[in-house]
Amino acid sequence: MTKNNWLIPSLIGIGLLSLALSFLIATRTEKQKPGEAPLARIELNLGKVFVLRKSMTQKETLTKRAALFALDSVETGPDGDATMDFDSSYRIRVEENSLITLDEEADRTVIIIKRGDVQVESFGKEGSVYISRDGIRWTATDYEQNYKKQAPTQNLPDLAPSTEGTPEMAAGKIEGGLTAEFIQETLRLQRGSFFKCYTQLLQKTPGVVGQASISFTIERSGKVYNAEIASSSISDANFKKCLVDTIRRVEFKSFTGDAISTVFPLKFE
Image (tube, rainbow, N blue to C red):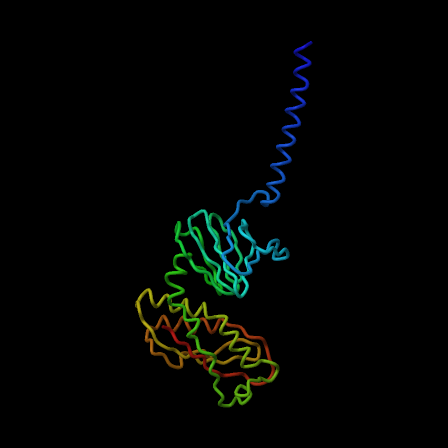
């Protein structure tokens, strides 16, 4: 009888303890997104920094440290600066006026740069962290050591329109709403593809620099035709073909009026 009196309270106590542990584990798991482990941990350095969760609908002010999961974003203000640490030993700083999103593919993390830039401060396991910018994906090491040193972003001149026979271009307006500014901006968005051509060239001819101009015509449907190299100080045939192929893949919006002929100058150094 004494044995039974001791056993029943013990079983009740164990049951209550199990419930308490289950509740604690469930609570913590919910906060950390069930079934997911953090992709990185971010630490505030200075200024205003925000963490955006749930498809950027939930915005949190970073006060000290926070865990980052797949599809979380980080936004820094004009004076904002924060550092992300990864289990693979990479340490990457998010610069001011930036917006980045973390994603996960298999066993690697992808940092998608939507605005601003990042800086790799410490390198880790190669191939574990990738950086995506302008639709081009690099390993974090290649991005810091190759892309940022050679990126022609600041050296890509604006579109230099040919005004012969197209006075509307000179004035910045095209009949039907297609403006010179729109054409310029559309081509700027392709700078990553132009740089990819240059990167392939550098692999064959390290240190080569130069300029190239591409002439082309935009049909009223927005399609590009008659694309060719108007001039180039770089003679490599594959490089020039890559530039022309890139222009041909660009699609503009449809418009009314005559087809538009123009020239796009590029500088690579």
